[in-house]
Image (cartoon, rainbow, N blue to C red):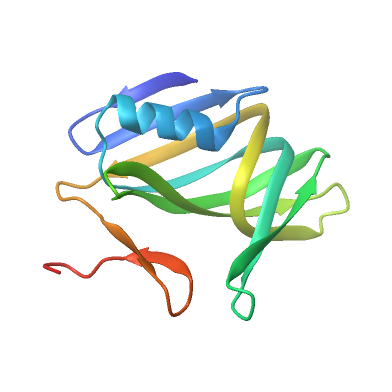
Length: 143
C-alpha cells in the first residue's frame, strides 16, 4: 500500500495488486491510531468475499467471487470495539458483462489498484454488540 496524501483529517491510500484491503486497512489505521474514519474508494479486485446479514440466523452469509471485478464503490467506516480497531465496509462491484454484485465486504484482494479515501474524525466511533439483532452497532453518543 502506498500512502499518497495525509493531513489533519484526510488520508489518501493506493493499494496495489495482491494486497488484501481489510488487513491493510486495519494495519494502517491501527499503526496511525485512527480511531474513527469514513472510508470510500474505487478500483479493481481479483477476488472478493461479500455477503449479506441474515436476520433470522443472526449471521452473515458470504460468497467468494474469484474473477476480475471493477470496484464501483467501497464505502464504510472505521471505529473501535472492545479496544480494537474494527471496520464496516460495503461494496458494489461490476463483472465483465456489466452486471453488479454487492454487499458487506469481508475480504477484497486488489487487482491492478484500489484508491481509498479516509476522512478521519476528531472524535471516536464506538461499536457494541446488540444481542437482539446480533450485529455490532454504532454506540450512541454518551452511552
